Length: 197
Image (cartoon, rainbow, N blue to C red; front, top):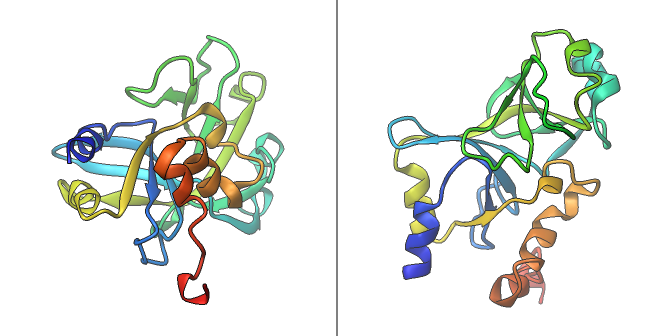
């Protein structure tokens, strides 16, 4: 129970919400969500990192197509606001170009932040080494996510800089759990459909 309390208190930007096998909601089943914003009054906002679509970034945001990391498709960031887009970018150095804002509370070493998609891509072209575009986002009202964690729907885990730009996003759920070791590494082997075992 103490470990669960520590998890609940550790919701903050830059952390991962990893769906437990009991989470059956199709929007979040086996999802890995990066927390982008969190506050006790505002609630929590994040993006699902492992739901690539088949839509190329160039089809939606042509000016940004050349900067998108592979796979260079739009990701389904969550079920809310599917008609809007947000992007995350990684900086290789210490300079912070115009049009990029660090995620609050994320260690500077991660150098991952939000991109202003209304600005010209040329402001960032030479200053980033990874860009991912998300359609929609995941959102929880005040207290809602804590309640879901207490019910056993989410693990709250440490993100690694490569998680946002995973080259095989479909394998991210298993990869994040495996690297935890112990019981969580075992959870990574949980079958897609336990009734088939």
